[in-house]
Amino acid sequence: MIFEEKKFQFGIIGCGNIGTAIAGGLIKYGNVPAEKICASDIDIPKTEGFKRVFNIQILQQNTLAENSRFIILAVKPKDIPQLCSEISSSVENTSVIISVAAGITIESIHKFFGRKVPTIRIMPNLAIENGKGIIGYCWDGVDSNILKEVIEIFSRTSLCIPVKEQDMFLITAVAGSGPGFLFYFAEIIHRYLIGKNINEEISRKITATLFEGTGLMLALSEQTPSVLKEKVCSPGGTTLAGIEKMREKNIDRILTDAFDAALKRAIELSK
Image 1 (cartoon, rainbow, N blue to C red):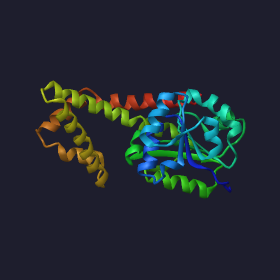
Image 2: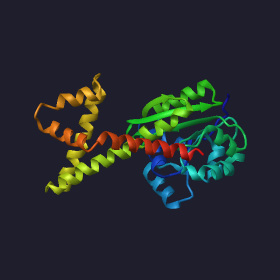
Image 3: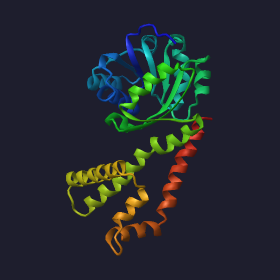
Image 4: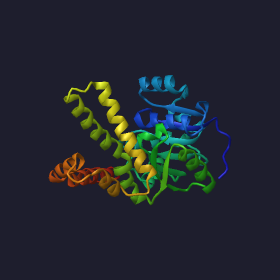
């Protein structure tokens, strides 16, 4: 595949949470200059915020599609069919579609465009904005050198894992939804501390540092989470008392059910 020169390297359609996270990650960690990124959204206040934060150019979606090498579809899954139909005539076969829509298969994207277009399907999470994201990806019709270029850029922002498309549902449930689950746990800890008369700021700092420090220990260790957990659980100690209470409440089953619910929903979105 040979690219004709395009004004923008990345065009992001959708200026919501994930579009914002992707833009931030590309600029701060992906070494993509802000002037090589453009964005579009039907929600004008969102585009104004995007421009203010990132200082990137805001375009109409068809103009964006005509002038971008990599067109990132960062809208809600329910909006993908209409979006693809609307920009189809503006997308050249030398451009590459990058879809982040949960549950929307590459085959469906081709159907919505009315033809096969080079497509990379990715499932990032919000931590891409801080250079610590996770991205599962699969592709169809993309030149190997172009795929390598895209993944090299995203690898500066995230752990990038090639997967079979059927496994994208699992990546969505774990890596995509996982941050929300962890934020929920953080919310519980934060609220518990405040309920014990620790002020809000200190409670937030304790919670954030707890997650940051524990995550770093896990990242730097070659031991499994189970082994690391046991190292903290002294016989008759406070941690073991809490763990035993969680086991009594069957926390394993609750969390497994939560991931299964997210997985089920990801599959439903593909139908």
